Image (cartoon, rainbow, N blue to C red; front, side):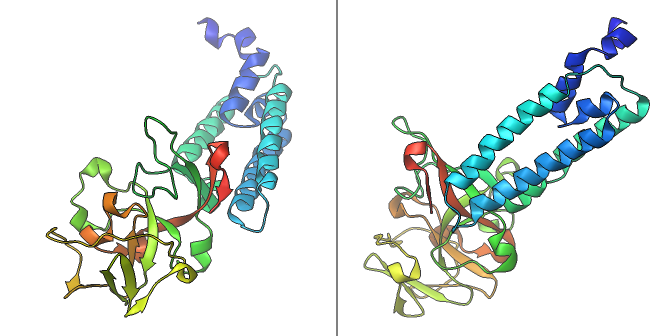
Length: 281
């Protein structure tokens, strides 16, 4: 076959194609394994530092934008540098397949720090805009680093999985989906919604607690599987109570109960798109 001929294997564009899939691999194919490995590790390190700059609130937004621009330039340079003749040996094929499998199966260093996601449809309006006919959904960055060293705080916009929330009765394809809502109740508290306000252990929560001036909708005549005692919601020692900012349209802890601590995935740190709404949260 022509594709396996030595002349075909030596074609320069194959080096750039391999580096597009695995950064720097085209250089390994060209007989420069050290240079290729340096590009691969450098780009992962650059992505890690860029992700870190996204989640640290004291860093201005132009810094991660600068990292992104530099990363794009570096990736283009890698493709140019990989435009060389070379040859794929069995060892290189095994290495390529191993790196490709690791790319799909293992988290990258940057994803250990932050990931991006699209905001839900309506549950967090107006804090987060969902996708509608008139607007584009907010694209946001999820800080996965902070909760590795500290506990979630009241008022945080937490991102959580749903794998252990049995009362949601989700189908298999909807399990482990990421959701975002505001953390209102902390472990061990008793929460009560009255007159559009929310109380924790009898204390009115307000903006100093990270709770915006939202009128919360009380449940009346609605079936709820949340654990209650009288008119209060009761939290366990490893549970969090979450509410949507768009209270009348939000399906949240009022209905299905608490988020287990083990299901907390991270917290939102900024909106990066659309640019008109880009800001730290």
